Image 1 (cartoon, rainbow, N blue to C red):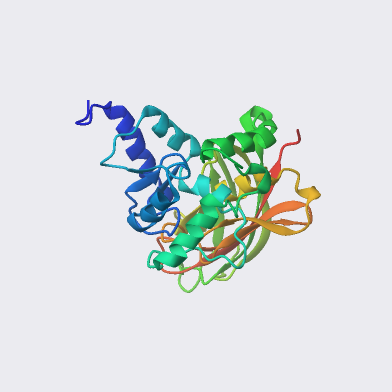
Image 2 (image 1 turned 90 degrees about the vertical axis):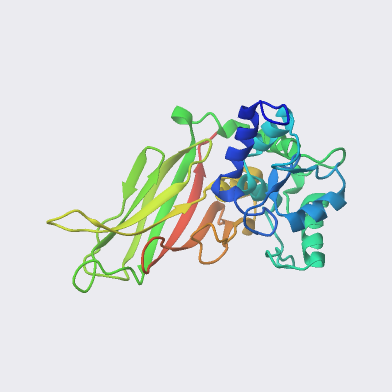
Length: 318
């Protein structure tokens, strides 16, 4: 038992959730190492945003300290069910209007307060059909609404809920691994699946324009990519890597259902942060009746290199 009289396993589940990559930064301003949470909304937040959440009232945001407060099993279960900051933000920030600015870690109180009230109290960035009109605010209600509109996607072929089309467009300023150049190719790994592009000979700015296909299960795993230099006589040398969070793309697509019913529009966003490889915010859009996302990646663990990708979500038919 812990000092608070709660089973250690329950506190550990909460701590393990906090250690997820997307939960290491505040859901509302991206400040590092959040130590507070909104138990009913299901997000981890920093001390400055915590003050704004408290001002909303517990009926909208029930704020608890990760380390100091006692949590019920139901509160921990609810946090785990939401899935963390990335999952929650894919709903609460699904459509941030051009006039709205997400605050940074150093934002003033007024900007922080206006954004958080718009995000949770008024639910301005949530798809209208998912909004909770009255009663106690909680993400479980929104998640239940989401499942009621997208649950039929969960029983796909062999447990898969849809296909992900990855278009590898080009690389820029890739690292040198041979005498003066490299022979790059890209490998994508999703769960147990692996696909790769062709090798482009002697080119640090390769253009692939290749389309690859992967199948996606629930929960959505990270899409890992690695760039390698092809060597005929020895092991291939790595030229950088990155992880791609599929939650914003797929959750946004499920929120809206059949994309052919909508005009071209932005429906979600994967925001650049210190904890991902994005060069710029990556918008999820409906384009020509399809859900797409353009991504510009700064390759990690390497001296240089960028990769331009385009994703398309293709759910299995009902």
